Length: 405
Image (cartoon, rainbow, N blue to C red):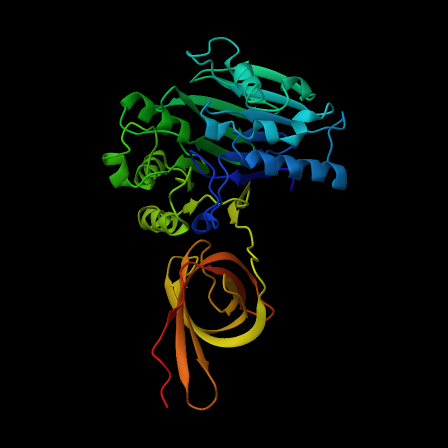
């Protein structure tokens, strides 16, 4: 990272409970956890869902491998907890850096009316309480400090200005804005629209932000019927906030455990029609803020063995500038899950492609295999004006007409 760069990484993107179902793997199944590294190296952890375990393993590996250490030789981070529901704290016992004495963490959240003073400390200790966990909090040797804040409060954390605002969620929830020299990030998960006070809080918190991470757990229809009062929102409400607050990029977050990847695809597609600069949070996805703007990168997927070959195909989709394209291309690397395609056009990340592969045996017998795919990465190809595009298939192949003699 350059001196004036802020990087955001998603380690958990689900709401309510983790999920391992196959039809949810593409976006990820861990619950809420994000990492922000600000200019100068200050690190923030946003929520402590099950994604926290993977983040902890990565931080420890970085320290041992690359010597990325502070003056005391340990890992330091500011941990901002939005609220105390399980999906936002259940990763605490599995974050290995908490168990190492050279590390130091500053926790921040609000005082719960159900717990009283030292709410955050009580919540942390309860995650290792008997009879729910084999060891108690005494084994956590890392230095820990706790700060209780309230909505409207603002403070400086190693050069990053943090602002908290109350959101509308059962038992309370805080949204956070991180203002860095490279740009601003708003994390506003677990919010149900419809109460003027909280709606105004959210819009003020989000005003002019480069990135807004927003709760889109339900469809608009669910929110209007059987999920009203559960404390969550929709892609449509996210679009409204993004427009009214003039944010740069909207990231749909807190995916429902029962929402398959295709459901999230649908939410993203609908949102992009209303607000083009929309993304769907995905485990491993990173967002970089710098003087060049906001850059989004998705994790490369290499599930299963791929076979290197050359197949002619017709590819149709949407380019980075929003225009539609269709071209003849070559599929050079394919598996049951995805493919590597060489294109002249540069498609947009997380956009959908239609891939029609021509096949034949050289004896006038031919057929087509039509698939839908989503774009995971796009990089310059070996030849000038070419792009290497990695895609993952998002439904079973649709075999075309049978071969004819």
